[in-house]
Length: 164
Image (cartoon, rainbow, N blue to C red; front, side, top):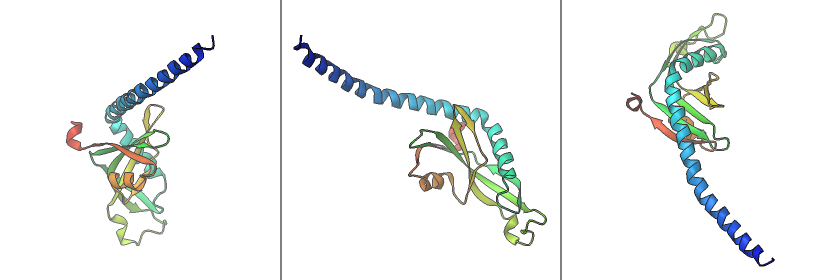
């Protein structure tokens, strides 16, 4: 009876090795399918997401003393995945226009009316695209992913012409 233990252990070890070799490519294919579906869903919901972003961002009180008067979205989208959690994010270039709030201390600053470049951040949470109105000022989407490269990995860059 004890002669079977080494054989059973060897069969188990081979099974674990085979499972490990099969699991990684399977996991990568599942991750790629989720990315394709998430990208498709982002484009289906993009108009709603942009409106939600602008609404939340304009209510954030940032920058202090300024009112958001416009937010123009570029077509290109950069997708990145959080290295630890696997959470997918989308980054879109935006051009934002402000005006001074009366009594906010910015009325006499000439640069208030200058358009500002930023990146709008969107993320997938429990399978749904969301935004909290977070804008990364003075960073393009590529620069944002590079800036947070310890936490983010670029997974796709979708130029405007590829979306049509």
